[in-house]
Length: 77
Image 1 (cartoon, one colour):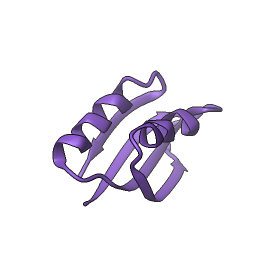
Image 2 (cartoon, rainbow, N blue to C red):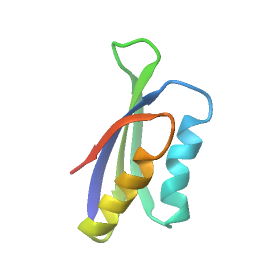
Image 3 (cartoon, one colour):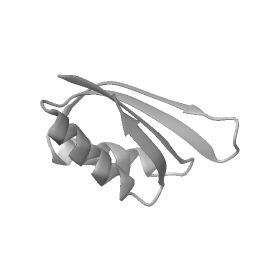
Image 4 (cartoon, rainbow, N blue to C red):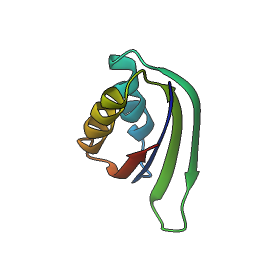
């Protein structure tokens, strides 16, 4: 099933690599990814659509993303 995950992150080098690494380690296919700056300086928003089979798996991905030091806030739909 397709899941939409959004996160606000620090706008720093390597954040995208660590963020997408969570998906790669769990072998979930990223279908779409978009990144843009927010009105707050030094903060960006990442939006990912990924093929994650169950709701529980999606919750686990979100929990892993929350552990990333550069992730300020995230959610999934």
